[in-house]
Image 1 (cartoon, one colour):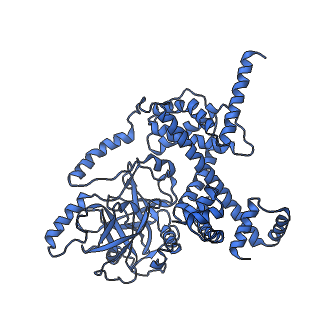
Image 2 (tube, rainbow over the protein chains, first blue to last red):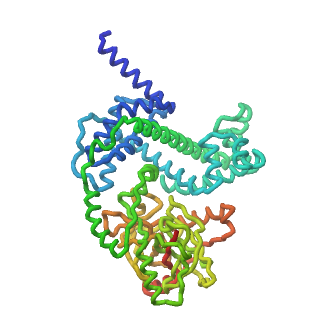
Image 3 (spheres, helix red, strand yellow):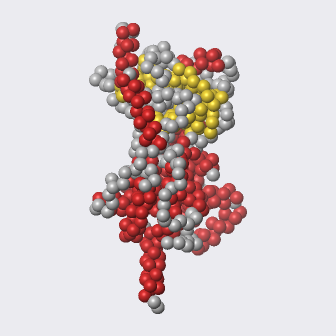
Amino acid sequence: MYPNRINLLKAELNEQALLKGLAENDSRAVEALYKSHFGMIQHFVTNNNGSFDDARDIFQEAMITLYEKVQLDHFALTCQIKTYLFSICKNLWLKRLQQMGKYSAPLSAQEETVSVEEDLDRFEKKDAAFAIMDRSLNSLGEPCKSLLEGYYLNKKGMQELASQFGYTNADNAKNQKYKCLMRLKKLFFAQYNIGE
Amino acid sequence: MEDIQLQETIERYLTDQMSVEERTQFEAIRKTTPEIDQMVIEHAMFLREMELYVNRKNFSALNKQVFNQLLDAGTWTPAAEQPTSFKVIQLWSKYKKVTAIAASVGGFIALFTSAMVLFFFPSINGNQILELSKAVEKIERNQKVQGHILNEVKTKVPENSKLISGGSGFLIDTKGFVITNAHVLKGEGAIVVNSLGQEFKATIVYSNKNSDLALLKIEDEDYKQAKALPFTIRKKSSDLGEDIFTLGFPRNDNDIVYGRGYLSAQTGFNGDSNTYQIQISANPGYSGAPVFNDKNELIGIMSSRQKQAEGVAFAIKSDKLFDLVEILEANELTKDLNVKLNKQKVKGSKNRKAQINNFKNYIYSVRAFD
């Protein structure tokens, strides 16, 4: 093999490893992605009427989009990570600017882009569902919110939750969790059906 | 089988915690019982959304943590590139003058700019939305004026407390339950003042920043329970183009102010499905004011307006009040309050002047103190 082909192969393997790490919530992969690509987005956003904080928000959303993409069953990235992240960020930022009534001229960017409409649509749909779940959980009140978060978010067992919340036994905790879950589902589906 | 056991069984089935035998048995039941099948489908959907929620929440946290670590390590320099001043900033400069004038009378418009809030709740966008809660010193000053006129009436604001925010509110239950916006209640306690200038002590029963709704209970011996509400609280959503009006206390004095407009979109800022967009001239102080249609129905609660577009305001949909009551009922501490929402159609006059006359006694100016 020619040396440059070997380098290409190495780069490709490296990208695959990063995506695998990302899928597994590996902080090293997340760090590597920030280190290699955030600067580009910072430059792009701050040169197009945005602030450093805007760049951070946009990049975080793009990272979530990529993260949720690699979780899909038939996941395939047909371009470099760099191109993908840039395309997402550019789209998101354009939209944000339009929403704020700021957008006037075409955005200045030298980078190449790919079509990411489908991924953005998926992100938006999931975003809506996420917001509904978040709102529903937050309007539950205590102890329901913490109890359900303990169970679903922090994956604690019923015994552990019982002692944490001062229930005499796991069965009492189970009962309480059931009541809370029913309320959460009611709140969630009341909004979910309207939202879809 | 008890509901709780059934629910548990479904969850075990969906999370692969069953033995092969149990699984076969359950699938047989599922096939022959459509209700159970429906429950399984529904719960599967719920668990999928929950998983998505949990994953995204955990990943977001990791994202932020990594970003902050790198930022602290000096990987990037935030101030290196200055954003060019653009429309919003220009608008702000323009508004600054107006605010300065308002401030000279004692007015100040609250802006909130938390980037975290922006990230998690895109519907609350600090840069583009103005809350409609009222000035601080404005009310204080007004109180002094009032003091001159009504010498013998002492204010019910506790001594040593200072008024810090204000807005409007209205009765939803004649037992003394007043709805307002959560962002109106910046302080520890509140009083409400009716359209005659009479003050009543109130306690904050419930306040939720996400929904921006808060519930007060008038607890004052001077409060005489009013007759039945002259309006219905609408549970269904309202139609586009519907004529609407509001009554609130946006001004320095105790005069109730009437405003009219129309419902311009089914969703609020950035497509927020909890709110309507309405076309009305909304001033600070209208926060928490009721929005009525011409059928004697309450359809929303004023909450914020868009900064750049004059006349565009957002009202929380009235069905959120039913959610609120549900939350109160489900909570051990608040279930005995027994808040009842009026769902009965109110015949009453459709004449606007008569409506205003009927409604105004049910609408209050809300003042929060620290």
